[in-house]
Length: 232
Ligand SMILES: Nc1ncnc2c1ncn2[C@@H]1O[C@H](COP(=O)(O)OP(=O)(O)O)[C@@H](O)[C@H]1O
Ligand SMILES: [Mg+2]
Image (cartoon, rainbow, N blue to C red; front, top):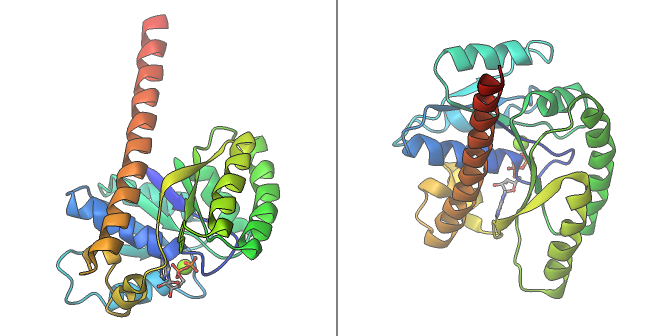
């Protein structure tokens, strides 16, 4: 299962979400790794180097080259990784397009700001182009740094539902703006491994929702396969 976390904007929480998801699945004993596609910043590779003291090991591999990304994924998959999380780049370039083309599930973090909504509209243009080649990408919006109480936040929640017409569904769970994420990152950890109960709880809820999505996707695929067999 390839989960890609992508968005054309930086600072929306792609790496944070990718790392928390990896921590969640590895704690559940699912063999998981992260592929850091941001070869310029390498923030998740750097983050991993700060994880010496961490209880669990989270393998992070830098992408070799854009062209080699599908091959990289194949190698990790044959090395036994059941979940491969792609930590995306902050530009709408070749990496982002390739990532969208190979993902089983696409996660798009977004923060409740007008700037993010505007850049998301630009993302949609590229997304529509990619969908010419592949129109079945299960795509979910993840609200990050989300308070949920202000009128503006409520408006954003409502606005996101409009993207349903593009086949993009907002997830129910969201991550609040919590200092635990930044603190944990300083020590090469995730909020899921950190002491703040609320941040950890939100992460767990988000991960469970994503897990449920891909379980239903796997079931659908298996059903489709067995139908094909019967029809043969
Ligand atoms: N929910 C959150 N609450 C507080 N800080 C956050 C949250 N999500 C991310 N951050 C912080 O925001 C910054 C950018 O997040 P990051 O995951 O690196 O974004 P991206 O990968 O999209 O550029 C980091 O310092 C990170 O620790
Ligand atoms: Mg990042």
